[in-house]
Image (cartoon, rainbow, N blue to C red):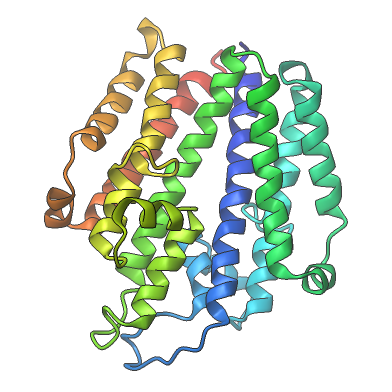
Length: 318
């Protein structure tokens, strides 16, 4: 497969996954913002709800360069509709559609039609329409379009190299997002001492689980109150949780095994090492090491793995 084709398929998948992740984060933030809360200890209490998606996505600095005031409207405009924000839902769907258009011969007609129709609907949206129909309804639409595209891909695409690059892009983006949102809750948005274990803390952990569709899974597995240790176990180590780091690395490692040859042993080594660290890790060891430090190390390693994949498979050599 040509490097250019592999690159377009890989980033098409990453942009679709990023649009869904952004929608999930904004939806949970929007619902959380409707709950009353008080900052008991200024400077120590948990941050404004609308700061969460900006911090998680690493967009806080860019946001404040554009918008002097933090508000629900400004964050929604920036993360949904802003054509100048490469990570906005608008830009992600546009980029995914353009990638699909560039490699129409490598995907099925159903896949292209699904992405094209999603982009045409997105292009007709504005803030007034989103507010009028309901923010949660719009964000639910984004999530469902992502689900639909994955379903169409799974149901119609030949299991060739193109399919593997789509799968690879999806799970690298998903693993990165899961690590970021878990770290933001545990490290950046720690409640004040007075709030730990209280209603605010509980709702924050519940919101985090809902943002990765893990609330029902948590209840089914643990049948108990939400605790940080168990949330970390669910979202890091359980391979039967679709958005956990372990599950994502299972897919990444398996996909790279199908793509790599003797010239890409370094990629297989890096992937296998990161996969083994998750497969054989224990929750107590992670907590003892430091959850923030563990997640930062994972983000660094998966970023390095993404760079290795890009340089070996996606960037043409002359």
